[in-house]
Length: 344
Image (cartoon, rainbow, N blue to C red; front, side, top):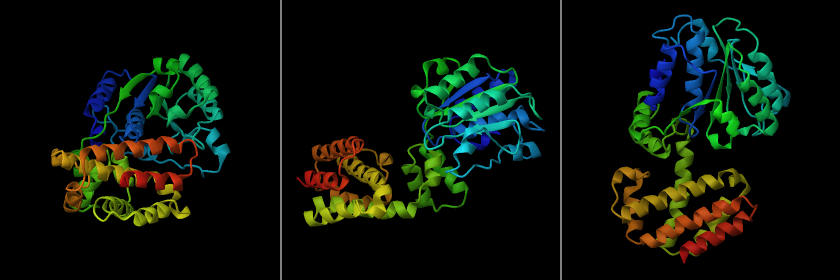
């Protein structure tokens, strides 16, 4: 049932219309940012075909077929051979292909080609979902193209991608594209509150941090985020309030400690959100656009000491550092340089 998903109501209506008219294309491209529910929508569409008791053409989510369709046994991340095959759910007519080490293996696509021409075992059709489809190399893309050009009459292929432009134009041209939008902040906040797993303040903060992606909100470790935010707040306090360069160098060293190497870019993200909030407050923007609403008092002190031009320059310098990360620069030296530039 598509109603269990939040956001993207226009996608729900399109899918309902396709189901009602029995005109679901043999290939669909679900395009949009990570975390907005593309794969869940694709799986729900497939379940509408395998469901034993569909309601208004949609899956009931309670019959044995629906329950089996949701259950996948994913292989261990180092088992390369397992990623060379279609990974089927407990329902034999719903299969999934996922990347191995950031690449979709050509053998998996060739396996899909073979499986697509088998008649359905239980349902009216078979469904194959290719997650992160933009991670196909040329060989895998060409193998898929052959399947799309000569589709099996009882199979559907759903491509999931946050970078649809990275797919071959010939692949995109053979798929009807459904474009997903970020989810409205309030909808994410209300969803989190309904789960009863989050306090109101935590739900509001997670919704702000999600950037319109429910998946991101659910995966965020708030405790860890707050620790990172405290560290980045000290950076700004050391620059704007106490002018302590030694503290800046200490924080830079801690950011680049081996135990924190996987968190470096996340720390830059947090620093950017704090600077953006201060910039917004400095320019008397609507409070609704602030992310760190629970730190208004701390940010107000910093706002009084910051200039808009300086804040904008800091955001540009952080973006420059991000670009340099791609060329294997020395992160410690680069972080020291960033903080010293910010300190002026």
